Length: 493
Ligand code: AHR
Image (tube, rainbow, N blue to C red; front, side, top):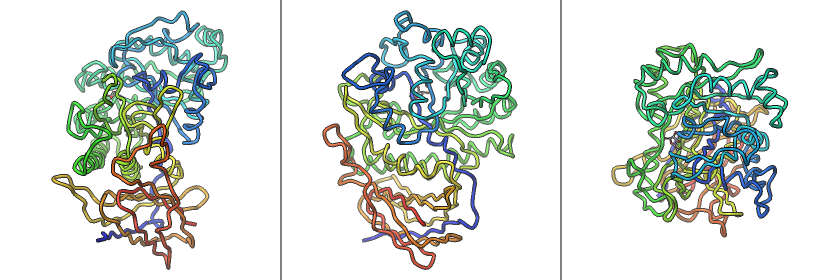
């Protein structure tokens, strides 16, 4: 039997902009996120440009990645930027204490990161070292990257880059409540005030400063940071991972049953409640919403793939992850007044990745395809969606069967994104389009034979978008039949 949902797209009452920085990617020095995944150095077997593999860069370029967060994560609060500049063969080899205890060659440093960011067509979001670094070290790094003149600018020029780089965003540490220094919220707020003071932009340049935010439902953290440090920051972050089976992560990314599917989707839906409550804490101190929420780590976190270094956080990516991605992108739409940045963790080979590589081979994950389908959302206007969905559940895990968001792009076209969490039933969504003058609908669907279908290196298109013919438009009403376990994106003209 088919389920039914109803919706109204309120193009007659448009909302805020869906900030393109919601599609930010996170690239940490972790496992094969940087080394092997992006950087192959002098390895001639893999075509590359100045050490960055062409296949991965091209795929990311095609996603329209707006911003890349680097170098961590936990790695950031132990990273000393001076170790990553100058001749590569003279850079110190360190131990990556957070992630697998492997050696960190420092081959990718500031110049290389800025290079790959430009190759991808993105902007830079650099996280500073608050935990183990000094305000002076942080100030000098910012000056090295952005100053037009002075001895640090000259050193940058000697190292191959005369012009200052654009540094769009700077993180005042990462997870100061944990790997960034195990600080209590009041102390972290004071530290944030202090360090942020020394992140100075050259005249006429703006660098947005992001405070290290809360873990999950730590509303006290957000409230304290807002109360004590809001004068020094532009954004406050939030980290929330979807971890079926609980912490430490133990669920298998590829082998799971319908209970594992439902539990994961229920876990990801929690994002809606978390943002609502963190935003309410921010409202108390910033009712005009000057400071944005940057959900700069989110995504699924499962047990590492069998046989891999558990510190590498290498996991598979299935149709379930596609649903997770689309549900979160839809949730962000309903909080777009406060959420201006989000960064899925992570870009390549780590956690809920866009791309997986194996030596010279690469594959686009189901999550990649969702980000591609949602490209029209970047900087479009949110059209609020009033949705009445039936529930879908398995065992104790219950979620709305349908999630939705809609936007109007700059050219006037309306785009609607829908998910059907129910793996067993199609869902017909009857949608009233209030204030939309459209006569044609086209679309694409992402689904697959099984809830755990994935793309493999030798079968890369098992989960890939296909043309969608299940939508009809008549008299301002859009009728869509979503296949079970699917993501559908529609374009109305
Ligand atoms: O993304 C992996 C890790 O998760 C990050 O380094 C840290 O910030 C978070 O705990």
